[in-house]
Each structure stands twice: as structure tokens, then as C-alpha cells.
Image 1 (spheres, rainbow, N blue to C red):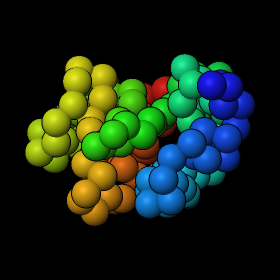
Image 2: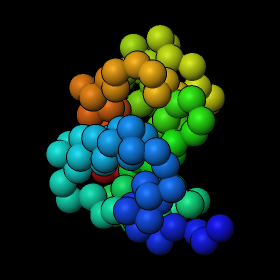
Image 3: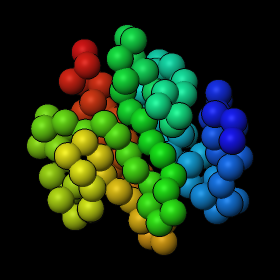
Image 4: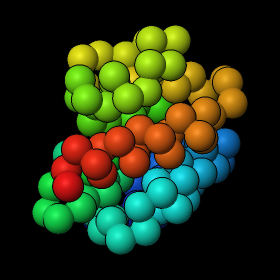
Length: 115
């Protein structure tokens, strides 16, 4: 399997429904922080700001992993406790609507943390 070099290459490896979810996340992050650069890092779609990882995300079998989280982001977005995840991620189930406003707020909180 070839490692993806672009978002489109990454997304192409998933079913159409998952591709749509990935594209929606991509658009939500771009809208929140239009000055962020889009790259692939750790084989995942990533947005960088000032050379630092702003947000990256990945599709899994049953969820979308959204990274990175930090204590500052978590405290700015208390609704994250409603979702499963790890210390540095939140998992959005593929079978539920995406919380786009929450994704936007996390992205903005992360931008604030970087700046």
C-alpha cells in the first residue's frame, strides 16, 4: 500500500460515505482557520499553523479520530466528555452526525493555543 501524499489520496482509500465525512471535516477546519496549511503527517490529513500541527484526523473502521487535543483544548470544549477517545484524541462515531460546531471550536481553541 502506497502512503498518501495528499488529502485526496488519503480519502480515496475509504468508502464513499467515509470520504464524505472526511471532506466535511476538512472543509470545517479550513473554514475555521483558512490560513492553515494542509499536509499529510503521520499518514493522516493534517493542518499546520506556523509550522506546528494544528489539527489532524484519521478514518478508522467505526470512527473518525480527531487529533491533537490538549488540556487547554479539552477545558475550552467541555462537551468532549460525551465522546470516547484517548488522552490526545476524540472519536466521532461514523454512524452518528458529525458535531461540526464542536470540531470548529476545537480547531479555534487549538489555534489560540499555538498562537
